[in-house]
Length: 257
Length: 297
Image (cartoon, rainbow over all chains, first blue to last red; front, side, top):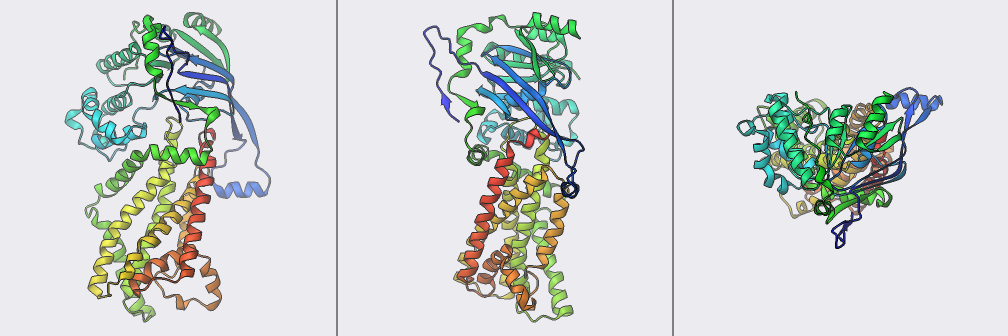
């Protein structure tokens, strides 16, 4: 991966977006009947009973996100919201089109997905931090901040299975946001513990935004979308139904639903 | 549990300040789906970038394995020792082979075998653990089989302790030939990783491969002279035995210890070629499939 040095003009305005999705399409091959065992696969192969249908989860979707901009992705279930996020998080590769992302992406999707119940909080922080692509030394350097933010200093050497779900969620959020990302992907339905901690999470996200982090927010909740974002993209059946200023898109989406 | 973003004062309208815009795109990593290097090379680079994760996964495996067992690390050493005691009893009292220093003969091969079977199996288990994660965050997939190899090597190093003990206790002479031992271990690592990569590729789609591999491993175990002398195999099987890569590696590891003399050049060549071919094929197969793993809904 190359490193670019964006030459700022005298107005200090770089010409690069942090996210540039250009006419991207994603195709899945779905078997008509799900085959999960190799034995079954071999038998069906011989009997020529394997058939697949293609499903375009996304078709010709374009999206640009500028630095420090907050964009909402709205649409009904199965509209392709998660697939679009996966393209940007480079979990998936576009079948057609092009995806460019500049900078570090932090997905706040499933906090603590890599947590192991038998390991202590300390060990899990190291594991989760490196899973997010940070060097061990960087995780150690932020370690005290992470523990302080999650408010679990007393339990950090206890195994994770002894944690309440709120404590685990707090630790997951603290690790995932310990480094300021260039792009933060937020699933609005994400739960982060109690009311007090939620306010703390919001404060941290707000602070990152003020210093330049872009936000991609997936949400069904239109008031939140209007409150947080400047722009919105409305996906419907894998295609862009509408994109533009948040109030306009949210109103149209609300009227259609 | 509360959800993020419920307050309504989140919109930050000063977002287009030029200074803010400039901040995040300076000296940043660029990902461009249209300019990705070939998978085999990209995966190699990314696995290196995530080397600390491989280390953490190995630490996790070694720790979780021993955390809940009373015997702790001693278990890794006891396991081959107990196996050896049973087999020594069976072979010297039931089958009545005359193998001098049977304990060393068997244990030196057994620990190489355990390394091979554990690493290949663990590669699939690692992949199964990582699977759900791979649909959410980007992680180079090769870290999982590589972590399985790391754990296998740690366990192998621990198993060398009982082997050294038995060598000393039984009075098998310690010779300069033992300096050759790292060579078969490099081959064993390449072979186990190569086979593990192929297996974990298949296991992403078919979970029953894990069970099928256990059956194949049992067959391969009995078709490799580990606990019995090669001489008991009928003449007709010798040709087949030469096609068994594990056999060559086991011989390469055992002979310097057991007879104090390295194995012949043919064995060395066979082990080298088969293990490097396995590694290259495994890497190409795995990385060519790695990108589409998340697309298999």
